[in-house]
Length: 145
Image (tube, rainbow, N blue to C red):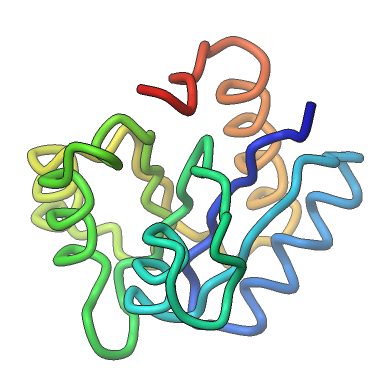
């Protein structure tokens, strides 16, 4: 059975590469689908655009807030207002530690909020803990949820 992917919605090529390096370091083999904009992420979820039409529903979404075009806040609201996607856990992965952003995201359905760190080793420890939680301790919703 094919594993459901993580959907990474991140516009920074450097952050994408850092996450991919960390996944390899942790020997994390779950597929990761990357979208650089909220629009391309929505197209992926709806089976439209350049990505495969039979795209599996992601098991988890890692969402940056500061995206070009539609930002992560708006995308989070749209996602959680949609019956088909609202059960997918969303982890915010942002440079913003502003309490207004944190509060907004939790009020609008984010499952967790992780601040991107400048210290690479510390960031990898936080990322490893997040992956251990979501793919070790937590039970994720089924694709039919």
